[in-house]
Image 1 (cartoon, rainbow, N blue to C red):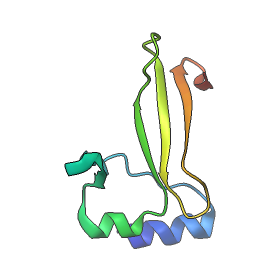
Image 2: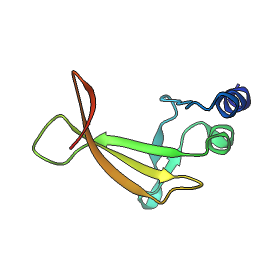
Image 3: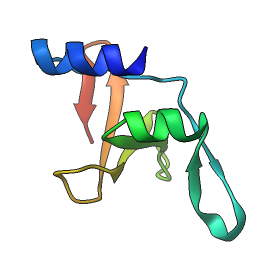
Image 4: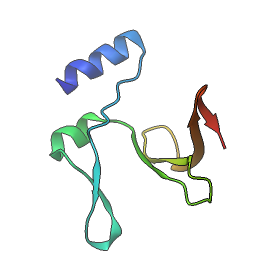
Length: 87
């Protein structure tokens, strides 16, 4: 299934997200993808989404953990009636 989704996303130039592919903490504080080698090898870019540490409850942080062409980075955002908004 993942290989078919990857081929379709490359052919039609769109994003495929798997929100069910979560990560867990292992010894030493490292993150490990749940789903085994199949999911970890079929996904090119991994993001870690969490609540922000600021006082505002609506703030969220998206951390780019692994990507073939982008450096590791973080961005703060919030969700409101108009969609995604930078913080």
